[in-house]
Amino acid sequence: TSMIFTNTGPATDLRLWFFSPDNVELVLKLKGMSPDPAQWTQGSIFTTTLGTGESLSLETEGLEELQTGYARFRTGPSVGATAVFSLANSQTGATLYDAGVAAISRPLRRFTLFLNSMGVEDTGLAMVRVGTGNGSAATQGATPDVRMRLFDTDFQLVGTTFISLPENHQMSRFIHEYFADQPEVAEQAREMQGVVVVQSAGLLAPITLRLIDEPGNPTLSTFPVIEGSAESSMIQALQQAGRGNRR
Image (cartoon, rainbow, N blue to C red; front, side, top):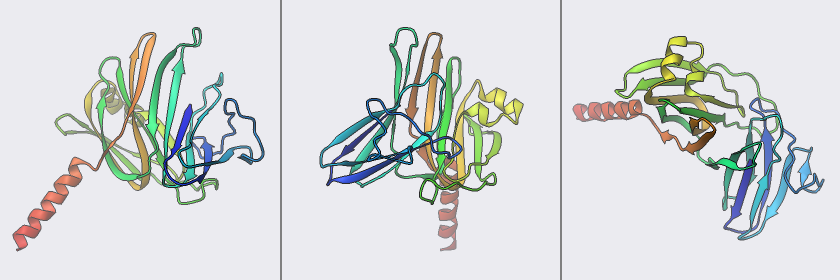
């Protein structure tokens, strides 16, 4: 995975953490960089300064065993950031795909995404529950406070599931995997087009994942989610109509 930072404003500090899905700090090696004590804190937090107009590209070393998680960074408002994760052919070294994810600076409590799991295509959702701490403290358990609903293309409800996602934790699944406790819904979600609506008590940083699993040539891309939902729009319309009738 590569992380690219560009500063369009005054010089500012940059601090970067790596976390497992369960909010455990990961100690990762970056290509071409040794763990200089001046730039690494506790072995897992990278710090540096970006001057005006400067950019920085960091890349993790690929490991034989796959590690999953997410990165969190703290810097000035003039810094833009993108993460790019890649898959290469282990035999030829050829890059099969690059998928870019822009830094999510505006977390959401309600959002919608389109599901297409027909044939060799599939759709996933990765999300991080945004915490209020300093990014390194352990968090306590959470109740199932994320609701996910699956609708068909006619906006008829197919299924509902509830997800426990504590602060600063990350989850990445295909949509059918979120409904694993409902076999009939999960089976339908494996081969359909529809709409997924997510509502959370806390703030989420989400991204849609799209996989085209062609044999020998898989491709993965990312898409932003759509803020809000059709339900919230209908509720607003009804409320406005009610106020109009009261007049």
